Length: 212
Image (cartoon, rainbow, N blue to C red; front, side, top):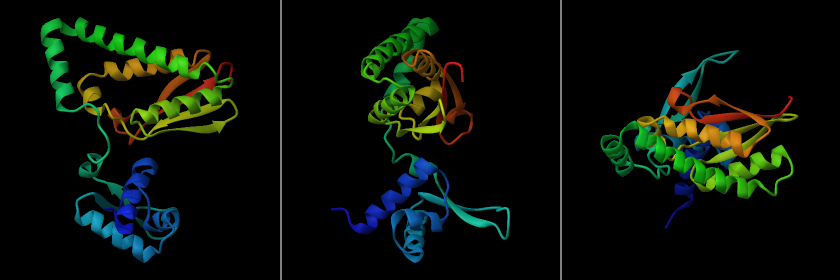
């Protein structure tokens, strides 16, 4: 049975996953608990090997302490593709070559595109489509959200990648996903502006209405 303390710690992990490194003061405000209580949770999570503390220079005054997830903590979030998927990728390459692997990725791309187009068909605006796409991606484990940057411009943010292991093994999966977004949001310009595999903490896509 979960306790209030455990729930608070899980919320801290979730906030750091979706918002990136944060200060204890920020986390206390989000959780609605005292800074002292928050620091106790942070210390326990650090003792468990789930968090690391570091100092960040501010514009004014002394550096402030921030907290971030460790690699161990990243493993607590869902990953639908583990060792089995990596082995399957290797096997496909060995038996069918790169062409066989590309055929597999193309098949997955077509199925995803069909599903997304069907789900987005009832959305009248670009914003509605991006929000619906974020909802679909969240169901798949991407912890996605739609963020309006300005008129006619949206961000599709994915705070987690449940196929990260497979993507590291074969970046064709990432290329395919970008193409799916472009096709299901036909008429909009879609560009990847943050990329987990290039050192960012998440993947993000900037989506602009045609002509903006």
